[in-house]
Length: 626
Image (tube, rainbow, N blue to C red; front, side, top):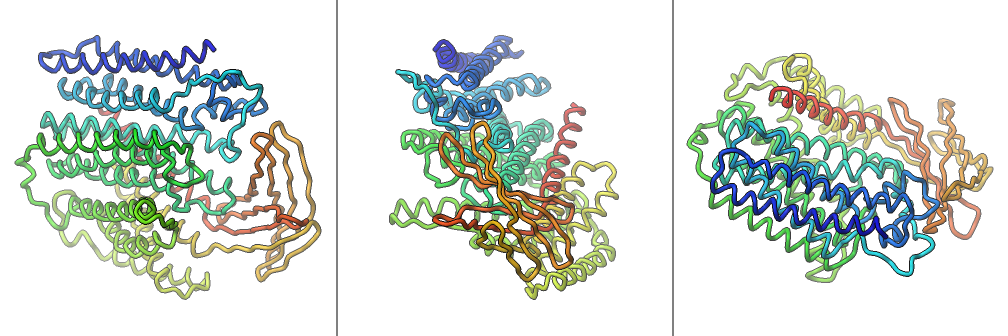
């Protein structure tokens, strides 16, 4: 009871400090020469009380205090300690408190690490950030308090959704939120810089740090979520165009475009208006994703809540943010005389702008595919589901020119390049890419010319990225990220073209023979774990070359809530994954078995890590330069 009260009143105290920061900052804007020390203390205590509230929530989960409503709804006394802690943010209310914690932490860090920036710019960033923070405080207190108390106190909890009881998904939300909240600093700082007419090279160097922080964490968060979906959901894939996957991809696309535009602004004063629009759009998409998930509008394995009052609150809050941003942009954005400088057609600047057009196209496709079913249901009460074929048909054709143009742009110079920069070596690499792609198609037995062209384009980008990595000694961070992206695209394409799948219904002792080999269901065993019963099948897989592997997929029957989940067994090598999952067939002794061979699966994870690693190197270099 005491811990519950500490958590609740800490949120109220945090809100009071937010209001004090907002008022103090507005007063200081009128007459300020140095940043008021009071603001630092107020910001620290704001963060401290939100942290205290979050620690109280974690303690309630650890101690299994079922008098707390969300502990009762999302925990159980037999649940392992790790998942008790993860349960603190594995629900709607707790995840919002975590979001608020990161919001208050980031603005405090911004104040500490922007001492060389203009004082009014720092204060305005703080003011705009407090508007967001106060909005989230009110959202939690009015619609989503994590400290509602139950009486009489239940003797046991309902448990956490079993598919959420996984290490990858336990760390996935905090990492993703660091990416989302990083974009809030970019949003507030961009509005502050617009108000102060401070969109400049110096501002670009400062804000790029926060763009990189947000981009790195969002990349890693998407990676961890993708890995979890691959092995936990039992579908044998890493991306399913699930609506909640899409709402994390959209701000990532915006951030990627923004990151490249800031590079141009660092070199010369160009694209300032477009940078502000991207900064606003990134955060609006992050909050929109919160609205779609938390309101229960989206139907997904990831969604937590289904409460119209929450959806209305976020929708109104989102509308206010958009309107506020547009007013500042149109009333305060002044024309920069330097922007009249013409961009030479053959330069890195031009290709970054074209890259942005492609990114916005990809973003539009994902956005339409995600929200169109919602609007259709509202207008006509018809329910439809938009799946991978929609995205593949609209994205893959445009991917070919995107990859080729990206390949050529890496050899160009800033401002102006000569025609001879696109030299014979690049043409030779392109020919080699075409030959290799058709060889791959022949090995795979594919007669699809479209796939061959796509692989040619991705191979060309891959080979150019390798060449670029060894030629650019001063830009290793950028080269690593570009190489990681080229490897990611190539791995995804080869994985899709070369993957194989076999499905069969088997009883223990049976053997299924197919064209490429055989699957034998040797035996089955059961074990009693702490909070679930485990049923493990032993399967012997043999291919035509007499290569032999044993796989042990698992069924878990959780005690609270009573749920059956399928746990795939995966044998990973540098060449491919052998993936096996089984499910019980109702009414008899048969098990449905799905066996897949997924080539180059590990390289998808490695390439995404290289993307984030390249961004991290760039971030550390920026911090050391300050």
